[in-house]
Length: 195
Figure 1: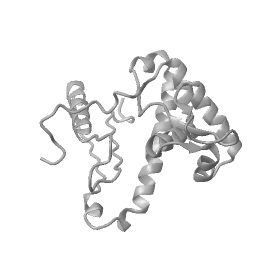
Figure 2: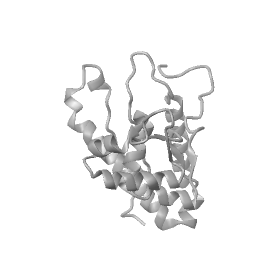
Figure 3: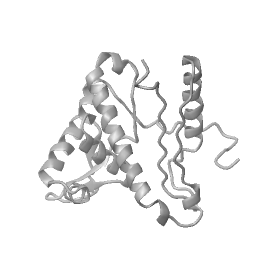
Figure 4: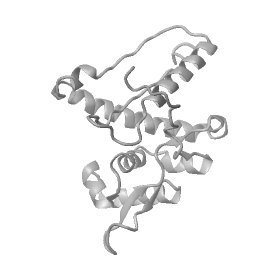
């Protein structure tokens, strides 16, 4: 089966930042999440480059870069830049969200999840905008799917476990021959209208 190997899949989050109550504050803003996502996906960049790409002021980007640095998400890249031009890079690939933070810091964990959802929504909207322009093969391989189903708590936990195993099996840290960067989003939750 494509994407499968005889080896146990490597944990794609082995270099992820483990969030705590303090670091949650560093991510609880959509622009910070977007900046971090760009640095993780595309490598080091200057504040000016990020401001142009995001179409926001350099002052705003500088503020959010300092917040990301303070909370340990990014650092200055000493091998790039000059005394007048600072280059920033992500320290980690992704982050782990301990579930106890939902109880310990519910407002902050909600803000981080909302920022993450905004990031996913932005990426999905951009993908839909270019959906029909993808090359043949890639166009047909794209997928948007959703289901409403009835599950027990144990079944939802099983679905979560199974989906994580599938996502981990297809996670590649480095580019693969003939491959492209592909975004995979997955969410499963009880219907908010049914409590």
